[in-house]
Length: 407
Figure 1 (cartoon, one colour):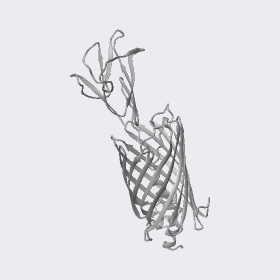
Figure 2 (figure 1 turned 60 degrees about the vertical axis):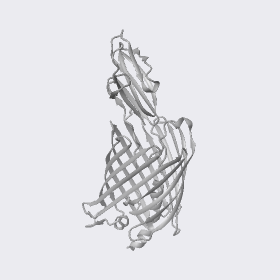
Figure 3 (figure 1 turned 30 degrees about the horizontal axis):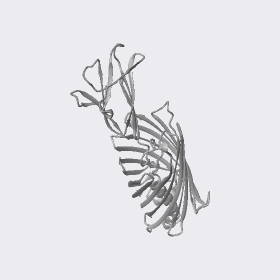
Figure 4 (figure 1 turned 120 degrees about the vertical axis):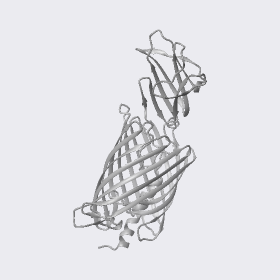
């Protein structure tokens, strides 16, 4: 059997590649848009596995994203070199499918490869694939996924797979998510190095994880943290915990600084060991298509985090759809055919606009920029009121108006 020190040495390059790729993985990848984005990354990290020495590593990487309507494809790669001459490389390909007719649905498919020694496929490395399906229900997104991987390390050829379910909640600038996962692996090196062992000989280790994520996004800042708990199940015994903290600062429209630290748990699918880490990375976007600025998020999102989706508001009088920097409001007011129906809103200094009749109702469409706006309607010169479905506040004329917030 390999010594504990030798196991940790053989696993080090993989953890550097994953940590720094995640640190650099805050990429502006909108859900639905047409255009292209590219980025370059550079960073460094300090990594320490259990009972191992603290090591330093540097990384460089690049990626490109292209979207066309409902389908987008992103590819990125990174190369890591540690101060003890260990090296690793990682490639990731992601596709996203978010059809316009299914506004509340999104499907992600990831294929990745990690190699130690910079030789593809190499004697030591991992190949994995994962699929994730999300469904938006108001301000809550529920999702499920599955992944599988194969790892080669020092004559050991192991396999792992996992299933996960979870939910996201997006109250304002905050995001709260909880994920449960069950993983199966025969990678005894990976498990024993992280404190998970077998009570008796069985074909695979079974481990159950629960992860809580919390993040906050405002202006040029993005802050996030997570906490994970792991326990062996069935013939598997032992526990482990993990945590992470990350902060991102948008220095300029094309330059992003990311700092993060924590302790990640061993990944049974990607063959990455448990380790403590701290890292800093810089991302530069040399390509920013003008038409894509309206759709790309200021920071984008890390691959480990699902995109923050602002839910639609749908009532009998209001259809409100929002994306970063722009909101579209469709008002539908039921009134007699000979009525005079007017709309006014704060963005145009409350200048009344007469609504046109379409079919059996009066309809008006308006586009609002980022910010907080107020909208009011009235029929036949009566009192101004808030359209049903919007929070009502007092307007400037003794009536009521509805509030619309565009991120």
